[in-house]
Image (cartoon, rainbow, N blue to C red; front, side, top):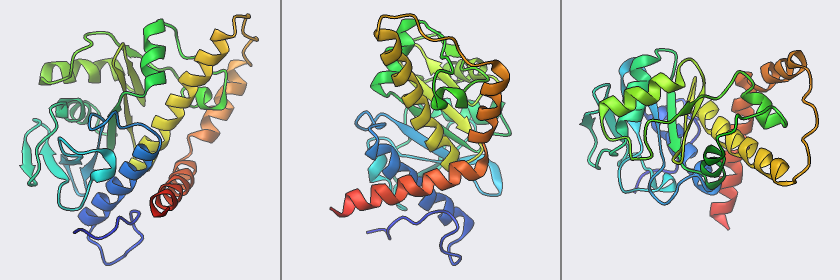
Length: 249
């Protein structure tokens, strides 16, 4: 049995590769605790430290909370598995094509939270009517190419093209993809996008006209504060501690 997951950098004796795996395992625990898994269908990845042509990924057939040091797989930018004993996820091309198109991206997530899928079915634009909404004030594009599983490089490239320079893309009637600078940021953004969609669905379901939005400059000031890397690290560490406490009870 593999050792318990530790946060990246917590144990200086770990190699950078093992630290990356441990952080991915911690991310899985957080995502599972917040209902992001959709059984075994959600998946997350991170580039291999020192080699941006490879990435570590949750394997096929396992839940977010079942990742271990032994079953995480390594894939290349063609979507081929190059290391690991478990199976490669069939939607690997969401990850490989985003990494290919975005050298700035270090981590990718795809998930199907119910509220996000419901929001994509409304055809509405995500609005900054909450703090989680303000995190995405620069805009969240929508991939409308297919409801089907993204199982070809061409479909993965279409998702990457829809994402463009943004940090999240909604996939109509399907879910979402997040692309960011770290595993920690990816996880927190995923939870905040889920919350932003939920809040807007609840507000619009109220039936009354929504209040006027705050000025764009005010929203962007909040956006910049909430998108600081330190904020993502602090909140991820808290979420991981919560997940560990739940697992111990």
